[in-house]
Amino acid sequence: MPLLMHTTNVHKKQGKSSIKRMLFVGSILVITVFRFWTIHNREILAVTPSPHDMQLYITTAQSVAQGHWFGQYNERVITRGPVFPLFIAAAYILHIPLAIAQTILYCIASLLFLFCMHLMVKKKWTLIPLYILLLFNPFMFDHETFFQVTRSALYPALSLAVSISCFSLITTVHTSFKKGLGFAVSLGIFFFLFWYYREEGFFLLPLIAVCYGYSIWTTWKLKKLSKRYVTLLFIPILLFCIGTHILSAINKKEYGIYTTREFSHPSYSKTLSVLLRIQPEMHNPLLPLPKQTRQTLYKVSPSFAKLESFFEGEGGYDWAQSSEIWTHISPEEHELAGGHFSFALRDAVWDITKPSQQKEQLFLEQLTKEITEACIKKQIVCGLFPISGFTFLNVSDRSQFYEQWVNTIQTGVLANKLDISTEPKYSDGPIEQIALFREVTKGRILTNDTTNPALHQLPFLQIIYSSIRFWYACIMPTIILFFCIHFLFRIFKQNKLTRNDWFQSSLLLCSTLFYGVVAFYGSIKSPTNTTANSYTSGAYALLLLFVCFEVLTALQQFTEEHNQ
Image 1: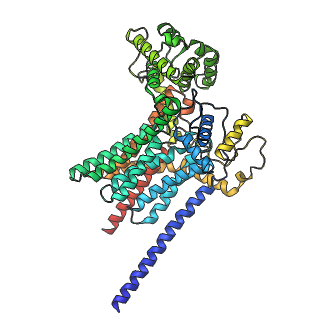
Image 2 (image 1 turned 45 degrees about the horizontal axis):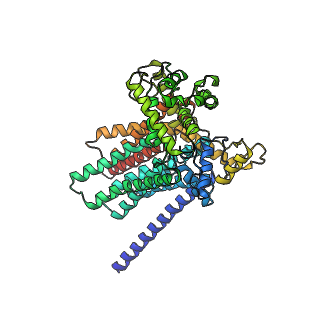
Image 3 (image 1 turned 90 degrees about the horizontal axis):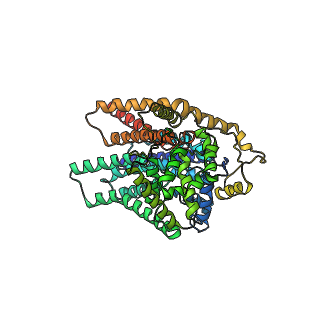
């Protein structure tokens, strides 16, 4: 009889546990489906013409989908990171609208957090509000970041996925080979996508260094080094190298250059580096190579002299015209802003070497050699770093950096400049280009002749968007500040730092580094754009993740103290 009662109680507990598990999974499913509903019929904003930016992603993605890699070689085709057009092409082939595909990726990253924490947290229901906090990241509702075809739409998802995969790997590397293998593969894939997505991927390197460093140090101290351990830590590196080789090999086969992105190839990067080391007589960090400096270079470098007809002609005028918004200098002066200079140089070289990729590389190598010799001979004044003459010793430069830092924090931390609304956005541009955007993204694109954007007038949807804007712009900054203070106070009280503490520290470090890099490049390139919403989306997800970890730590400490 006692045995029967015990068996009955066991079955009851198992039944209750099963019901709780079903309710938990059901709640997550409902929240996720609701998240998709909030954006499922929002319009994509097509900005055209934009041959070096959004339009480039669309045309190269269409070419990939048609089996022609990135298309016929020209001066633009592989100047950008390859991952975003590959992502667009994958969504197109799978017949998934781009906005939905971007949301799927972000939901996968958020679910990865849920899965990782589910293995470590006893009270599973505490994870639901944290999941909601991550899932409704305001940058994923911002018009500029998410609903324009910018590369920044994937930034929050990839930042989250890399961070969580890395933490999960070092957490499970000694406890479960199977789980460790899964997270190692996840880290390798997501870091590869992250690194070749944009050009600022290095800002997550401190997080990976801290996680790997902590794991290796503690493993060595506990004498747990093994072949399995080394294999698991090496797998992400191996996957990254394999992916890099595949991309580079395809570009070599198609275009004759072994690189993932032209500006990363030594022939291009060295040329840009030596040109940006030149110290102009006219101090303006936004102008990497002012006209006055170019006039000197035409005399000391025969190769650079061949570019004069472009820079001082129609090509230079066109780039100066689009630079005017940042430089406030008339296009007739042919002054190019830093954000445009690298592409203008690329156009100028292409103009005299096309269609041969090999001629381009030889020309750039010779140009680099001539400018370097001019620096050595003091024919031009060159600094040590390629920063366009920017220096913190200059009052105006410090002031410019401070202004950009404030703008970056306001946008990237306070989230008070985000355009989170249900107001319809209308695209404008050539009809055939709008049609191409509509075809490739499979999205809803409104033009001035579009009628009945009734979805945007749904009162419930307006309330949801207003609530997201209010929470993340008015409440969340205070919460972030509170938990940063709580974290600092907590670790100063502790005798030693735990794995979670090191990870949280790396999240704050990477966020600060990212915002600093954005502010710096805003000071020397294009302040209107580099501190815009789409550029500052990369680190906000890390701040949300930091808050989630600190909440879980505080709850764990409260539970332990209560039980005592």
